[in-house]
Image (cartoon, rainbow, N blue to C red; front, side, top):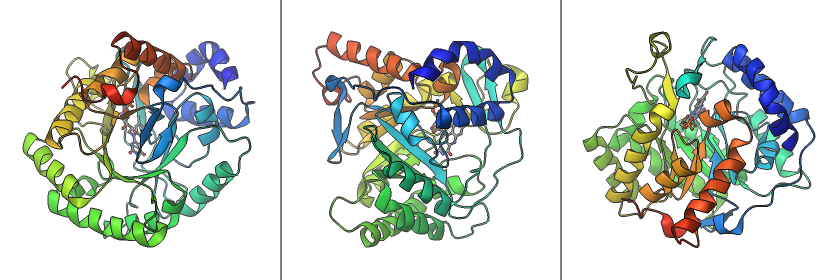
Amino acid sequence: MDVLAFLYPALRPLLFALDAETAHRLTIKALRILPRGPVPAHNPALRVTLWDRHFPNPVGLAAGFDKNAEIIAPMLGLGFGFVEAGTVTPKPQPGNPRPRIFRDPENDAVINRMGFPSVGMNAFKANLEEFLETRPRPEGLVGINIGMNKSQTDPARDYMALVRTLGPFADYITVNISSPNTPGLRDLQEPQAFRDLAGQLLEERARACGRHMPPPLLVKLSPDLGERQQEDLARAALDSGIDGLILTNTTLDRPVHLPESFREEKGGLSGQPLSEKSTDMIRNFYRLTGGKLPIIGAGGVSSGLDAYDKIRAGASLVQIYSALAFQGPGVVKRITAELAQLLKKDGYATIDEAVGKGI
Ligand SMILES: Cc1cc2nc3c(=O)[nH]c(=O)nc-3n(C[C@H](O)[C@H](O)[C@H](O)COP(=O)(O)O)c2cc1C
């Protein structure tokens, strides 16, 4: 998508003059209609094999940017190694009233209280099938991030329906139990609730996808867990048989250096102010699980060095969202190029060799 990367510096002031969500919808429309650039050539030194799956590089698009699986091909075209589409809910729902995304460009920070607006799993599946039929299809993998409808009182029912319907199409599935914007969702991080849900979903996955190479099941956690909760969850995650963790979702923290009018918005904070907190949590979980559970790191990654810090803290892959809003589409290739240089400088031949080396 070199056209968009080329146009971005001129478009940026316009996008930042618009309401954040309008800018986002416009970006999605542009990505859908603009001609695709050449399929990116990935640097072989950045390839990662995880869960027997091949990631052309370790930098992915975090959930929430492509909620409805509409722009997977153009996003892979920007050079991402993988795209996590969703969060998708079983039934369509509008999410919270707008405005519900707020940017603070001074501090590279975003607050959102989207509340899972979703076209629902059937329309999502149709979009995904369209991508899977794209020829030529850009290299890169597709994760699907699933969440429950606001009206659901029995969360497991929604998550099971999503695993059944979308699991067979996914390179991995992420169970989102950490968004701060759906009442009751974060209660699923309570260890017993976590164990129950993970057990049910692993059974459902076996029924829906068979036992030969089913999509790995990952759980995405909040950065706002206390030390004791992290210890309990690390044990529960290892015992449960899930395949990995995504660390982290957005935070409810409001660092004092952020401007007051921004800080007062309700919702989850992402971007630079989340960076250190999420890296600390990656390090904690890497230690607590003895490196046995692969981690995808997210939170304030905006440079190759940020990505490298998360890898050295124990992440096998990383994801970005907020940096894309502030730096535009060129950020992906910048991060992968910087990461390759950092690896080389430290004498690592592969990403895998660097995972957890900085703890
Ligand atoms: C506007 C917005 C919407 C998001 N929506 C979702 C979502 O639907 N599901 C999810 O798991 N995470 C969602 N996230 C969280 C991101 O996936 C990511 O975990 C978080 O933003 C930290 O990464 P970042 O600092 O690079 O943005 C959203 C983030 C933003 C800014």
